[in-house]
Image 1 (cartoon, rainbow, N blue to C red):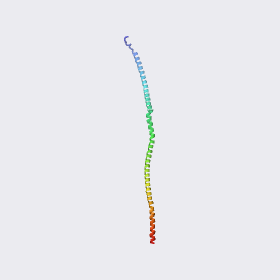
Image 2: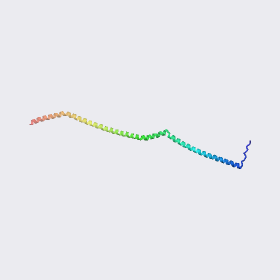
Image 3: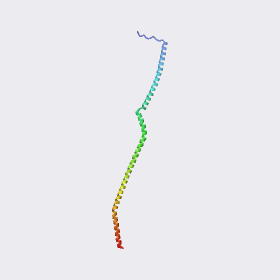
Length: 152
């Protein structure tokens, strides 16, 4: 069969065909617009879902949650640890003060013991002299008695 062109359309048929084609194009355009709106709504929903998923992922991230808990615990414990550090410093200062006072007390005790030793040594020396003092007193009394009895 040889290719023969289709018979030409009349003006009325051509107008009707063009009107039908216009209606088809308008219908297709309306459908495409409707589908575009639906696609935009889906894209927006997908973006919202993706954003929610990212937020959920951030909220359920163990490392981030651990950092959050760590920072909160650190905030609470910082005050307590600062108080402990202050108490340690106070105890250390009190210990140093007590050690210095104890050293002064030991020195004072040593000085008192040394003074007592010197006093004891002096007392022992005095006790050794007591018999000689008595002997001198007796000799002086005898000498005075002899001298006075010879004079009177």
